[in-house]
Image 1: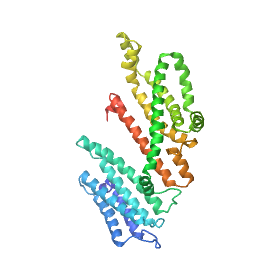
Image 2: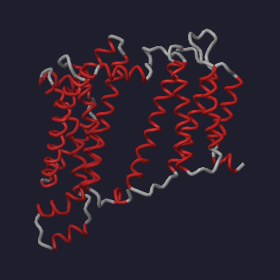
Image 3: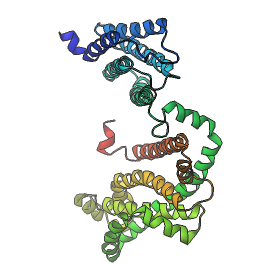
Image 4: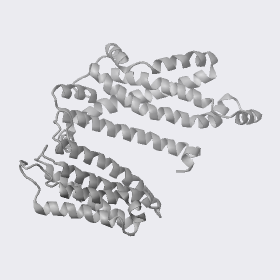
Length: 375
């Protein structure tokens, strides 16, 4: 009983495997190319064997390797067999997919319990665990869309989106250059820099602080779809109008967070600086700005996503025949949903990288902060 509880995912996978065996075949009788006997036997042996191995007392590394290989090889055979038989999957097929998913879950659980002996091993585990988790989101998506025969126009499978990504690299690269390298980066830098400078002025001049902060809270609530058409009318259809939208969206979060951060230093520290006869600028540079860094980086991380969203949405209201927002609005009108999802995937990837770079900069700059000391 204790062994079964320790590997309840393995026990459930074994039960699902037996249920699938009792409800064979994996595909409907009218499927064009059903699973062969050999493939069927290999799939069941992999799943059942890995489920039984999960009850043993193997080393964590070896157990994780066995579960990883068995789960992913079995699901690869299942997905390869459903190709060309879309919509013909039976209950047994989905039971086997669920069994493979449980084995992958058990694999991640075992990996999470491993304590690496080196920094390289720890980094590898920290990357591998979320990679497996993310891969299974795509696997389940693929199995659901192909196995259930979901119409392509409603939700294309990840394999089709990946094929579109590979075949449309020049178009996607041109869109990234127009949206990211021109509008987003320029607007992000100008918006964050100007928000930071105005925050310093507002901290120094009381009436600016009292007048700007309420306006900043108001402007932060402005809808993009209301600002974007106005910016297009003012600055034209090229990337400049999208950069203007990004500047508006990033200016006020930086302003509000920086002003709040400048007030984060304690009264004792400020009294100590006064006892050293420090003037305003010395106190600002040596005490208040370092204390405000967590707030400033919080604004930078928020703005990294706001900038991308703002530029893409602004392109819906007028742009040259290039850009991520333009491509999404155009291709959805043509019912090319795989291209739309390809653009969304690229935007998500770029946004994640952008956020990650800012987070790394934060970790290097605010290493003294309690939130980073325990990492």
